[in-house]
Figure 1 (cartoon, one colour):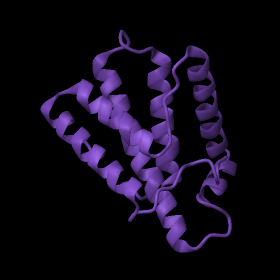
Figure 2: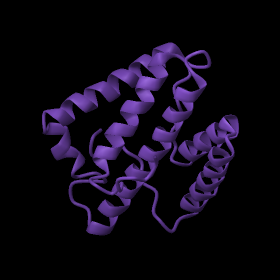
Figure 3: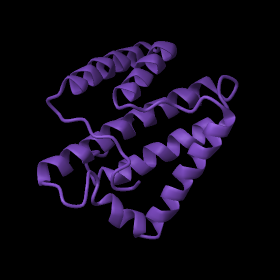
Figure 4: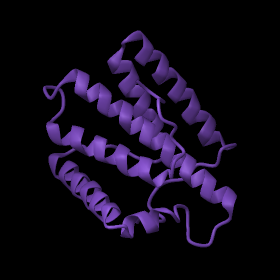
Length: 154
């Protein structure tokens, strides 16, 4: 799951173009302060990667447990070694770069979803959703291996 679990979209594919269309629209909504529109576009970005957010509390709990387990394994260096091989053990550099780029983009999407959830407050969603999105962003950022530059967002 650490190596083959994160989705990869090639940079020049139709899915990548669709992702960037939704991502730019989400950034525009964020700049305008339209949290609902930004959240919808960010969810569409995730759908482009084939990811859906958990809908029930049980699914949310399982997702949280997986992200927590992934973070613990990363702290024990096992997950760090496995995530170094994102995209596969025996792949070329281009595929590995695309895998790390996909992890970077997903980490930024989860980070923005978490920021929107923090602004909306726990009334709209539960605290576990916020923990899950923050852990997802952290785990994917660590799998991106330094592709996220400091100061990306304030």
